[in-house]
Image (cartoon, rainbow, N blue to C red; front, side):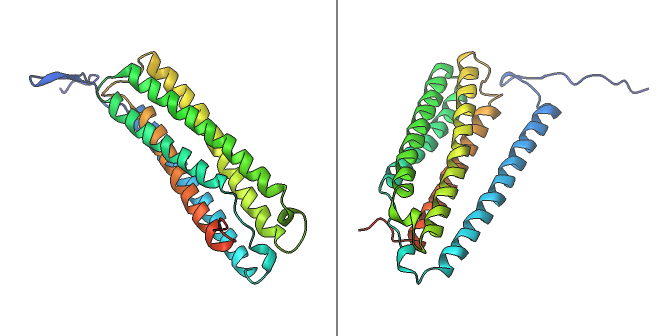
Length: 211
């Protein structure tokens, strides 16, 4: 009669034993991908609706508001975050725990700088004339709303980076178990791509950066 037992860690002559991937690990990964998929649908829908609305008002002079140049600075900050979290995923695979923690902490700092620059850029739009009067205020308002929605997800990402960085400090990840670090990188790459799509759409449907 066949006996049933809990799977044990397989031994290998070529290296240290490998821990099995547990069903709970797979469920967490699947949940993470579903979360990103839902965000992708949300942001794509929002960008498309904005583009259609802005296109319908393209003939109105005041709808051609200039975009704040601070948007370009914030974009650079966001790209830096993506590069840093990607580096963290490489270092955690080499069991460089302290370097991983420092890189994640630096990414959180760059993300915080992005948020501050975004606040400055949005205040420039909201205090400008296009927001308060004229037919262009609808386009300006939607730019602000979309940028704020993105910034709220950035704030959530900053909290997540802090949690993952703290876990790295305490050695909770290694070359075998590093999904939280990977997911942090996936999330920030996603936010990076969404913002680039947003700012490209803003540039095509407004007065650009006034150059």
